[in-house]
Amino acid sequence: VNRATSYVATAMIGVRKLRNLPAQAN
Image 1 (tube, one colour):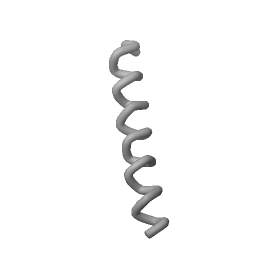
Image 2 (cartoon, helix red, strand yellow):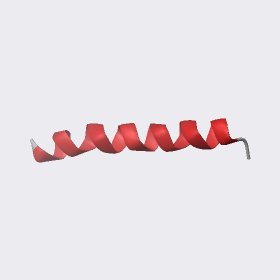
Image 3 (tube, one colour):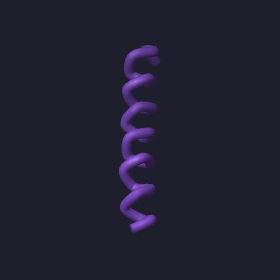
Image 4 (cartoon, one colour):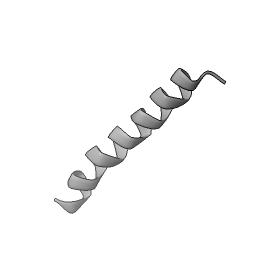
C-alpha cells in the first residue's frame, strides 16, 4: 500500500468527520 494513498484516504475521512460534526451540532 502506497503511503500517499493511505494518507489521502485518511485525509478524506478526516475532512468528512470535520464537515459532519458542525452539521450534526446545528
